[in-house]
Every structure is written in C-alpha cells, then in structure tokens.
Length: 360
Image 1: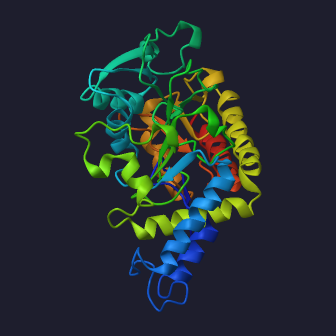
Image 2: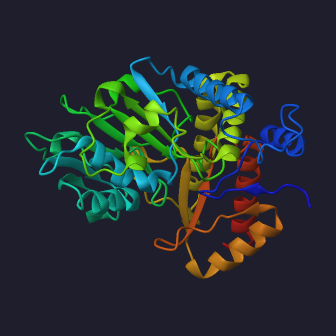
C-alpha cells in the first residue's frame, strides 16, 4: 500500500526521509551489528548520538547555555505534575491561562500540588479565542505563569508570548515546537510531547532555565525532579533509546531543510491555503477567531453534520486519513505539522472542493 496523507493530531506523520533512514538502521545501526532498539543507552555510540541530538536541537532553537535540555518520559501530561513539583513550594500560588482541554488538564493536575489562580478563561465561547492579556487577573506573588501555546483540540493558538511580569513563564509547546523560531530566553520552562513535530511518543522535551533547577520540593520523586535529569544527561534510568534516536534524526532533517525559519515559511503557506479554502466556502466553517487560528491544527465543520461520516469515508478512499475531529467537539480536524507535505494540504483542498460540489 502506498503512503497516505496522515492528518492525525498525534501520533503524527514523520518525514519520509527519516522513515527511510530508520528502515536502513533497524537491522544494523551505526555499524554496531545491532538494531538501534538493542543498543545500550550507556554505549559510546548512543551517548554520542544523544549528545548530537541535543546539539542539533540547541542550534534549531538557538538555546543559550543558561538553559538545560532534558529528555524525560511520560509525555507532556506528566509535565502537568512536574512543573508545580519543581517550581512551586508548598502553599505557593501559580497562575494558569485556560484556553482549552490541555490547559484545563494542566490546571486540574497542578491543583494537587499548589493553589491555582486561573488568570483568564475562554470556555465562555467554547475555547474559540485567547482572552486579551490586559484582562488577565494575575496573582501578586505567583510562582510561575503557565499557558498552552496551541490547543490541538479546539485549534486555538496564542498570537503572542505573554508578559510574565518577572515570574518564570512556563509553556506547553507540544504542538508548535520546532514549527517556527521562538525566543527561548522569554521562558523559564518549555515542554513538549514528542508525538507532533519531534518523533514517536515515548519521550518529552523540556528546556529549563538553569536557575530554576534544584527548586523541587523534598517530596518530589527522583524521576520527577528536573535536576536529576540535568545531572544524569537524562539517563538516570533507561531512556526510550529508539524514540530519542528518531528525535535526533528529525532534528538533523530540520537543519537540512534550512532550519526553523525555512520550516515556518512552509507551515505558514500550508495553513493560509487551508484556511482560505474554508473561508471561501459556505459548506465548511472554522469557528476560531481569525487572529487565534492554529497553524498546526485546523478544525472545521460541515454545513450538514449528517455528511460527516460520508466525508471521512470518502476522504479515506482518497488517501486522506485521520481527519475526524476530537470526540469532544466533533467535526473535522486537519493537523498539518512539519512533516505534512504541502502536496497533502493541496490534495485535501481539492477533495473538499469536490465533496462540496457533489454534496452541497
């Protein structure tokens, strides 16, 4: 079977060039006579590969020396607990912005470890916008300010980086990381699950300012303590070697494409095409305020929801898969991460126009 255009929100599409490299490496990686899935994380070959992956990532994101790069397990969801355990003392208050399902989950988890102040909440309009920053109700002495840069379910993206007003700014960048340049120095902590723009699920990226290390409360388990990962090069226990290796290949691939500025130009073009097609039609609709539309996750609904099932079936027959919207909101969702080729977006637009012509 030929490759389809996979619009899944995650686990998401991986670049074809990376998949081909994996195929070649599976039986004999780096002339070790072993598969990458068999090598020791303590081996010289893998330690060198892990170090190169970090260096390539630092180059892509222009990460300064005053930041540590960590690769824990548990996905971004585990960071919902690790952030307060590492940054908030017992009895502290942390500020959170509520703009969708993932920031809501982060808030629910953080409440187990600290007092949460929700500075802004866009649930009043079904998470279709980002509240204006001048309306936020901040704490006087917050331990940190947390937000989710892009809500994958609702397709809402922050059009700005919040002003943290001097407290550490913490951002869940799971679905925007590596899709464009970002000024790392504006953040205390950036974290991201792998399964969008980094590689397979199983590893997490955490970029943390070094002055925030060793602040974990005493009850924090070792494998939830940022400083433990920092001191052990993220190898205090056996890491997911295969996923780390794939992440390194993705970083290398992005550099070969011209880095994040070049990647951002393609992503911007893909998103503009798709939103333009939706906006030009009375048959499809995107409910998100225009200035907050995600460049990675594009939800849309059909004029007649009874046609949803037919749309999915016929899209699949056309080689366009995983377009179902999240079960909590319905409709459709096209996730167009870095590895989604522009030809995939063009094919989707052509299909949408033909579906409208025959069903509108």
